[in-house]
Length: 325
Image (cartoon, rainbow, N blue to C red):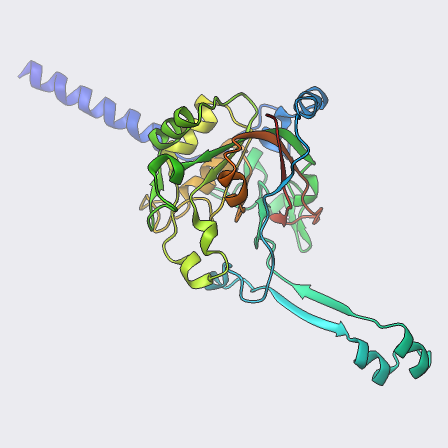
């Protein structure tokens, strides 16, 4: 009887411990109460100079996708699609004469102008730390009651994201598995990451930018195929990258980094909230990693700067990769 009671007590304690471990709470920044950029604080003048000094090639890979009407987006959640329209055309300028200079001048000097409307999380973009929160708070304990106005967040807005220059590493999961792209809804796990790194003979370092290829970018110009139960990374894998490998920034070639349907029943975006709200780790989505993967370039100088959209929860970015070898 005594042994049974001890076992029951141990079981209860393990249950409590397990519950405690699974509690999701917003992280407090080790970089101070005013921090707005999380792990991007790992970057400094010395680290930027170090990676730039290591460049041994003039090749440049553009890791971004193009924007077009009908491009894949989060419209199923009610967010606006990408829209493009012409505001001036050469012949229309002749007819309308908006500059008042007359037909002869407008025949000579043609004028084309255009405008766009879009959700900030479209195409290749970076998620700011205010994009997702937990229990009414975002990273570092900021709250909408104190820090969200009618014109956006007063803390952790996209305008606070600095230009990023760091060592970049590509982890090519389809190449590791011998496929062109990963199956629908496949969840990349920590063993996949370790196996791919070993096959590539690549070692992660503190402060790296880690980009994960799923192969989903091959479907980018077919929105229906691109959006249909795409693969993504799971919670175990990002915890290994953040807690064990101490990376600075993440990125992937799918729409939302993690896979859907969600891997947990109590959180519909557990990877998002873990990275952004708990750990202060930003990440990029909808990258184009095909060319760099085809050339087998796994280590590079990552250079990227996002638009300074004040108060926004994300912003477009055009990241570049310059090989280090």
